[in-house]
Length: 109
Image (tube, rainbow, N blue to C red; front, side, top):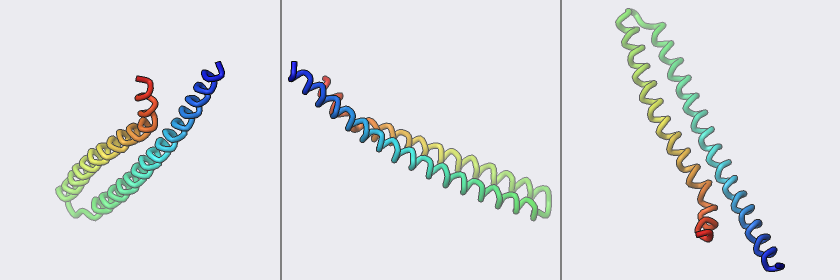
């Protein structure tokens, strides 16, 4: 009976340590995602401000339409690239958060 308690205590401690390691990975990954999102927001705002300035300085309707079209194209491409980057960060976050539990899962098999 004492051996069972010791085993249970050992596995409980191991699981708690693993959980803390996983939480640390989650924190690090979430911070990376937040940083990336903040940088994208800043770049997007700057690009939008620059586009508005160009629109106000446009001499003709054709030039204004060209500026707006270029901005829309650039914004879309930037968004798609950023969405892919954020998706990769989330995938990496999931891998890193699961990594500490791999040894426990392997032992359970």
